[in-house]
Length: 270
Length: 279
Image (tube, rainbow over all chains, first blue to last red; front, side):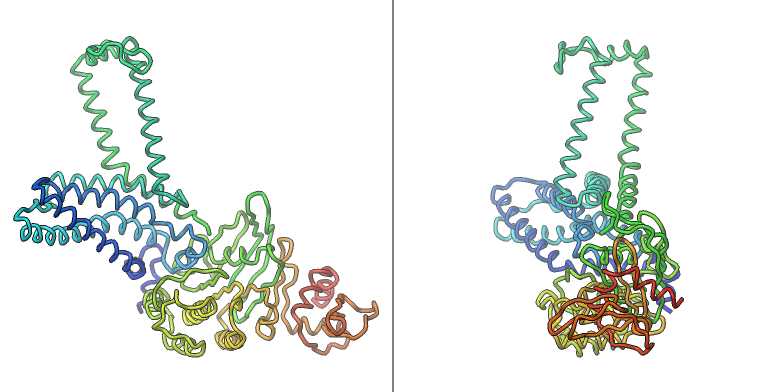
């Protein structure tokens, strides 16, 4: 009966999805335990040093985000390493699970799964370290507030940017974390160059080479003159551009990265 | 059932297969033979969906392998020549992977492991290459998949394990199952593989049942260099000559896969002509 229900859906079965999750956890649980022990040691030690100096009110917030962002991007970059190892890939690729199930499992475990898992673990470690700080130094740092707006926005930003590293993980066979960072840096440089050229085109008299000639130029006045718009209309254009950028970042970027990654994931051969 | 029609594949500009045509029917243990680099492993990868054909069609049951749908993967188990095993015990491996296969037979796995003298509490990474291979073979057979693909399965097995392997594999063959073995170790496979498929120059140059082969050909050892009449192949070996002749008597002769392989690759047209006349 169970076998029949599994066979019914060739594209997504929650049963197979959880089997894949279970497989990943059981194969990597030792590595996870070692990572938790290393993080616990580092947090307790650095928290004690900070408590000794009586500084850093948002100590745990900063440390958690370092763990979330840096650790999360490294973990994401390694998400598809198994598929690019000729000796490992055959087990994973021939494992009865659809491509969608395999991709979703890796996507969820490296994004929401990682964020929630690290939050839970970090919270426990922080509570232990602050109890020790109270006993030893009579000083404690504030614990994380996972319901604060700033916290939630930062986690949401992680989930969006994580998509870029997922693309890197699928496209780069080796050293995908470093290569993704390199690609993003090159992209940032390219955008900066485009922005400089655009600025020079719009405000030709204000630049000599890459340097502004007049430090006190009035951007708003120069722009309204160049575009032939009123200040109110220009502000509206600015607001619209800002809104488009926000939509592109918060709504479009992550799903676009997931789709691009999935399409490439489907094409991987051994 | 595996159907391959007009399949073409190559690495870069180099073509490995062009318009490859053949099919595998259930109830057989196919032996896939060929020289190094002829594409035996690639063919297994194409069938299991690990590689995508550049042209033509490959079907496993009614599935296109490159779609890697669970319905096909539940019915296909592939053991490559070189493989990785995770650092977990055999028992944990079974716990993790067995639920993916709907007809997995835990009892059978325990029996095969006993036969292969494997302790399920041991970590896979602590085993020798041959032991790892025996475990994967035992696990693969216990999945009860309809398609079982093996690349050089006897490499790394000791002498008793080779005969255990033959015994277990022969007992695992059912009417609805296809077992495809790619190998160079032809001596290990004698009395096991049937039909024999020989791959060369991107084509299947020979695909015959053992019974038909022995009906058409006599493979024997002669002390002296035989005369030209009816001889399709001869080679000097220790103690005489390995000879392949036309079988005029119609009586079934003994099988020597190594000599057959050499005969087919050196005199393929004449040998195939012999079989096609019958058809």
